[in-house]
Image 1: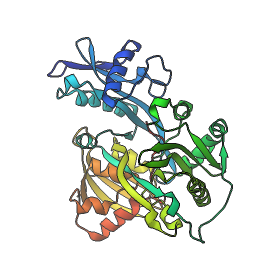
Image 2: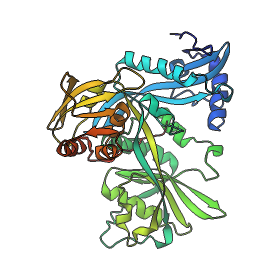
Image 3: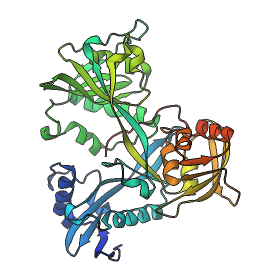
Length: 403
C-alpha cells in the first residue's frame, strides 16, 4: 500500500531491492555506522521487502524496518509481537512529518496483522511517548574494581565454568540462551542470523577492543573482550546469561579472576545479585541507568490477557491513546494469574495513558511510581497495591538481543 502525500509532499510506500543503497546511506549517516549493500547481514534480520520508505519525489528520505518476533512476557509465556528497527530520516528533511507518516503506516500494518504489542530499541528518549510508547526494560551499566572484589565465604563456588574457543561457544551458547529466554520477560527468540551478527562482528564495530572470548557453564555463559586504554585496562562483558544462581556466581568468579586487568564493565538488570556476593559491595559501581526496550500496546484486551500476573485483581481501566484507536475503558479481572479483559461501560477505577500501561507491562516499572508522577490516577490505595502486585514479575525483564 502506498500512502497519499502529506502536506509536505512526502509519501510512504513499501521498500524494494532498488532502495537498498539509498536506505543504507540514510541509516549509516543517521546512526554513525558503515554498512555494505552486499553484506548479507544488512537486511537478513529485517528484510527489505517488509520495510517502508518515505520518498520526496524519487528520493528516499526516510526508512522503517519491521519483523515479527516471539517475546517472553510475565508468566513465562511466548507472544508474537511486531518489532521495529532502523527508523531514520535524512537530516535534510526534518520536521516534515516523515516519522509520523512512517509510523502511521507501520502501525496500520500491525493492527491488520492482529499483533498485540510493538517493540523497539530507541536511540532517543523524547520522541516516542506521543506515539504511545514507553521504556519497559531498564539496564544498569556497572564497573567492578577487580582487585578489590573479594567474594564472601557464603558465595557459592560451584565450578563448571570453562574458557572455550569461540567456535565451541558458538555451538553451545544458543541452547543455553533459549532456556534463559523462555523464563525472562522481554527476551526474544534469536534467529541464526542474529547469532551470526554477534559472532562475526567486524573489527571496526568493537570500539578498539579485541575479538570475543567466552566462558561457558552448563547453565550460563559470558562473552567478553579486552580493552587497554590510557585510563587503564578493562574487560567488557558483551553478553552474559545465567539460567541458575550457581551459573551466575561461577561466571563472575571467572571474570574477576583475571588479574592483569583493572576492572570489569557490564550491563545488568537493576536487581542483579553481584553486590551481595562480595565482601565490599562498593566495588560494584553503577555508572549509568538506561532503557533497553520500548513497548506500545496495540490491543489492550489481547495484550493484557497474553501475560500472567502475580496477584488477583478486579479493576476498570480508562486508557488514553494519543496516536491510534486502542484506547477505551476496559474491565480487567485476574484470578490465579490468568486474566480476562474486555471493553466495558462501567465507571473507571483508574485512568492512564497507553504508554503507562506499556511501561508497566513487563514488570520493570511499578504502578506506584506512575501514580506518584500523576500519570496513573487511582484514588483507592488498596486497589493501587493490588495493581502494583499483579503487574509485577517474578523475574526481572531483560532484552534478549539488541535489534
